[in-house]
Amino acid sequence: MEFVNRDIVSIKDFTRPELEYIFEKAKEIEEKGYSRSTLKGKRVGLLFYEPSTRTRMSFDTAAQTLGADTIWFAGVEGTSVMKGETLKDTIETVANYVDVIVMRHPFDGSARWAADVTTKRAKQGLKKVPIVNGGDGKNEHPTQTMLDLYSVQKTQGGIDGLEVALVGDLKYGRTTHSLSYALSMFDTRIDYVAPEALQIPAHVVSFLKQKGIAQTKYSRIEDVIETADVIYMTRIQKERFPDENEYNKVKGVFRIDKSLLSRAKPTMRLMHPLPRVDEIAVDADDDQRSYYFQQAGNGVPVRATLLALIMGAVE
Amino acid sequence: MMGGMGMKKPAEAKKGLMVSPIENGTVIDHIPPGKAIKIAEILNLLQPGYVVIIGQNLRSTKYVLKDLIKVENRYLTGEEYNKIALIAPNATVNMIRNFEINEKRKVTVPDVLEEVAFCANANCISNKEHVPSRLYTVSRDPLVMVCHYCNFESKGEELKLKGAGGR
Image (cartoon, rainbow over all chains, first blue to last red; front, side, top):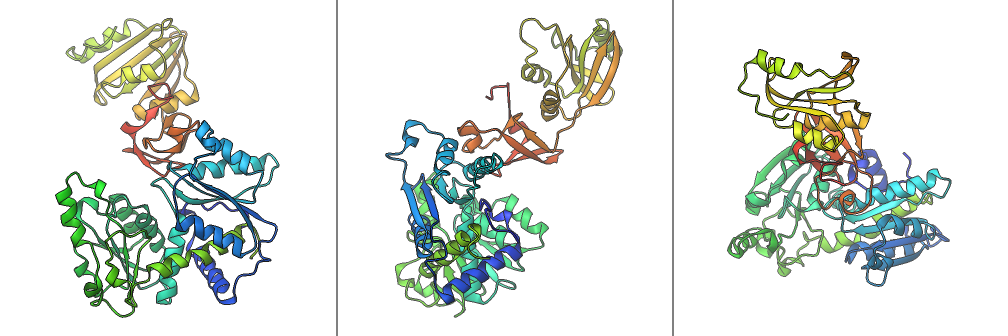
């Protein structure tokens, strides 16, 4: 299992044993505490071309907690990007300053391209600067998927044998696609709960079918609330609907409040990649099953582990 | 000479094309009907200077109807074979030297296509910045290719080819 200098671009680049290893190390970091000597003398570049709260701040926290310095931009205002600099040129430049680049970029596939650019540099004898994908357009957000899966494992004591319900916009939401792929590495059962127009794409279903994963589509949360071990809510965006009335009808159906949540198993955990709008009612926040804020907190140990692994500070 | 030959009997159609054999050059046969012009475009055969015969909707014993291209004094590069395969996966390319078929080759879509066709995802980095396109073949029939960068699966007819309204 080799992590040093490895790019983290897609969840599909990882195997189940690798994910389990990352989770084991993240658990160790959480239990033993962070050491500022782990990444002392290292520098992480955070290139956020698009707004982000949790991803940028948790990477920044993860890096600094392990003793690394961070340099960053958030939004392209004031950078050379405004003058028309290409991604390649920015990566080639920043790669001289840092040991790892974490990036979020609006174009699909930008992280793979950036990784190709730093790999090519390494072939020319320069230091390899690994690329960590913090979200590339509508494509992938692998560290979100890792922290989601880590949250599932942490709360349920394992992933095999679980029934996971994915709810909301399953058509356009990249987090649910990546999470489906990741869950398919385990022996899980997946429920897709969405309005027909926003159901999970056929290519995801067919990929999971080949892996022998049991999958069922539902149109109401009530159909899964009593059996699911994890409910993963996502936001339904208004702009996906041509008609506001249609949106309003759907909005009310794909929503969880305290009363609906009380019907779930006591061990069930309600997750959400955040930000939520109103798909989870505020009155559900105090329920022991609501886990979304702690889930966001799990971003720090998982991202700290990844940074330490790819910089060779943890074996 | 272009088009309009679909109503002829097979023998006449064959004779009609074969009366003008080429001494040296290339014959691209078994092109799906209606695709010859597109292939001629991407191979830049419609430029002044090339002697080209394009036959459309010809009777074919193998595929009922077909298109065909003959071009004088022009041979294809490996990249051009790949481009043809994207539009006409069953095409045959005959290289003619001294009026004889010197070599006959069936085109085939390679496992990896670099800088030949572009991902159909408009938001892909390879369509936004100067990035070398790279596609992997998922299926040949029907043709489906997945982008190295954004993982988007493009169907054959969605792919933009270099030199045909692409970059």
